[in-house]
Image (cartoon, rainbow, N blue to C red):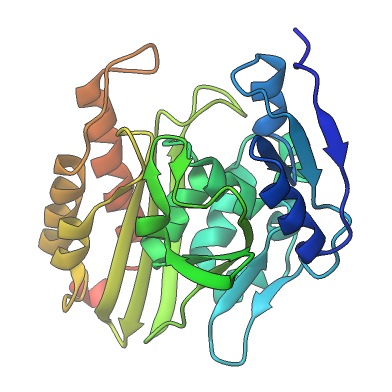
Length: 290
């Protein structure tokens, strides 16, 4: 199937792109296109105008900032993060997820920020952003605003981004301790949607968890922040009992549906198993109980 007829614009500045969005009510931003184009081909989406931002300079960088935050521009591809030699030193959760996003072909064109904006409940990056307490910076006719990811995604495939705004970057706040984390995902085959996934972020003060975040992929109508499971971890040294309690709380936070990828109970079991595995990777030897 072919997309409906559309007009194509290729602005060279954010101001021009925002003006185009403001002038065309039924316009969509094109960055990587790995979600939008398939939806257009299936006619689930039929924008009258595509505003291609790939010729706008300054949106393709990512890195640690002087204030300790980490910023990812709107044109940073999944593959850019996957191939980064320094990402793991600053953002282990994102580094772990990068090679698990979709397949190699999609990763060469798809973008981190675009994936978060797509707001797919089975999207890997949204779970990472939830676990890390990240935000999206949007720019529109009235300037920029920063939106916490918990507030940015308003539902399945829905965000609070205004029609004349562009998500220009993702921001991960500074860590209050040593940052640790990871990402685990179960998929039937490479590139398939997640049966279930878990993103973990820890900020450690010595062997004690100072702050924790857990984001869950594919086990609800939207990305889930397992706040009760995260709260179990804070102040602990990741002993076996704490890990078991956090795994149980994370599974309880899910609301999966039984489908061809597995039953609801199976998906809850996967979440609990992944939480245990991720936490065990960062468990001090002295915290283990025989």
